Length: 233
Image (cartoon, rainbow, N blue to C red; front, side, top):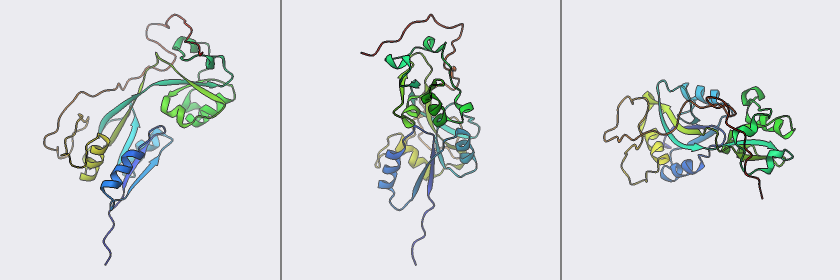
């Protein structure tokens, strides 16, 4: 009688996140335990999949509704402005926020998502500010991306339902956090939601990343003085 196959560990992620290295390490350590990774273009769809159990672990961009979730911030992303290749801002190395005051700044949600927003940018009908990894994900030959040095960053985090924590989820989180196959389980970041059965020896460290983000193109207390970005040589 053939052995029963273990249920797959389901990973969901937003555009720009590349979980391939972690999925690869899981397969090396657990060759008999399948794992599946699915990209979700819509943040809301990924959140719904996590809460209804379709996804066990999700790589998300903060802020999110953290109710009943364990959330570990991983890293920060720079913001970039995507402009058509013929746009004058493409001549700059960096584009400070004041340079965008007179531009038609597209709303990603109103455009139907980042992919369509970049298509609109390519037509010359506006510019859009995106996390750098998203801009790279949807890059095309007729647009360029320039760093916006004074725009707020975004935070990528890994999350899961706190009460649904399993040994498999803890092992995958350990891989993401860089623990080796021989290391003991020692979570290295504080989780926002308590586990149903807290692991022993958990170490708490300060979280990074802010949940409240200033919209690109706006500053508190009025816009800063205009100043040209560094021109490309």
